[in-house]
Image (cartoon, one colour):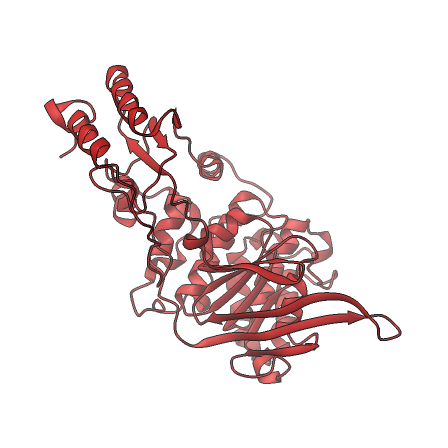
Length: 418
C-alpha cells in the first residue's frame, strides 16, 4: 500500500454498528421465454455492510457482481431471499434518494455540458436551483473539468466522461455510494484522486460499495471485501485477514556492509535453510508517476483534465465520522506530494522514522511469524478501521533473533539499533 494512502486510512473513522445493507439467502435466477431456469446469477448469498465502511465486490466477469448491484438498486427482484437497504426495500423511493450510483458505463446526455448535466440530475432529487448551481461548481472543480465546462459531454474522452459520471453520482450527497469500475479510463492521477475521495466519504460516515477489477485500488481503500465466483461468495472478510501470509516474515534494515550481510544471511540460513532471498526494495510505480507529473506540472500547463483539486466542500463536512478533526480531508494529491518533509513525517510516522524507512537492502525470509518476535520486528501495516490485526501462533526463532540482535546491535556497526 502507498504510504500516503496508508496515512489517510489511519485518519478514518471506525465503521459504525448500523447495518446499511443486509442480504440473506439472496438468489437471482434468470429464466428463458418459457420460464425455464437459464442462469443462476446469484446463489444463496449472505453479507452485511455497515455505516462508514468501504466494501469491495470482487470476482471475474459473469460472477454475479453486477446482478447484486442491480438487486441493491431495486432494478431487479430477488428470486429468493431478502435484501434491505437502510432497513427498507431497495424499491422504496425514499431509500433510492439516499443512494448515489456510478454504473460501469456512463449513460449521459451527449448534448449537455457538465454544468447542465449536473443541474439535470440535481433536479431529479428536487434540489433547489441555487443549491444545484453551488454543488455543480464544486463538483466540476473537484473532478478537474473546469477547462471543459463549455464543451458537451459527447466531445469528452472516456476518462473525462468518467469524471463527470462520478460528479453525477455525488450530486445528491448520498449516504450510500455504489461505484462500478470508477477508475476505468482514468489516468493515474485521476485514479489516485478517486481513492482519496472514497476515503473522504468514509470519514464522513458514508458507506461505499466498490466493484472493480483493479485489485490494487480495492486493496488501497476497502475495509472488507467479498469474492464471487459462479454466483456464490467464495471468500469474505477484512482485507488484512484475507491477505495475511503467516508463514513468512520480511526484515528491513539500513544499508549493511557486505561482511555483515553475509554473516546475517549465514545465520538465518543455518536456521531455515536456503529459502532466503536478498533484494533491493523498489518504490510503487504509481508513486513514481505522481512525482514525475508533479515536477512537470510546476513547469507547464495542460489543456486536458486537471488534477490536484480538492474534494467538494459540501462533501467534506466539518469533521470526521469518529468526531475527530477532518479539516485536511479536502487536501489534494499534489498538495500532499508538495508538503515539506516534516509535515509528511507527522502524517505518516511509520514511513518517516529510520527504523521503518525503506532501505536498499531487504532480507526477505520465507519463514514468517505474525506478529514477529523482537528484536527482528517488521513494521506493522496500519490496521483497517475498527479491525484488530490477525495473529498466528509464533514460530520459535529466538536463537536467530538473539544472534542477529548481537550482530546488528553490537559495537556500533552499520546496522546497530538502540
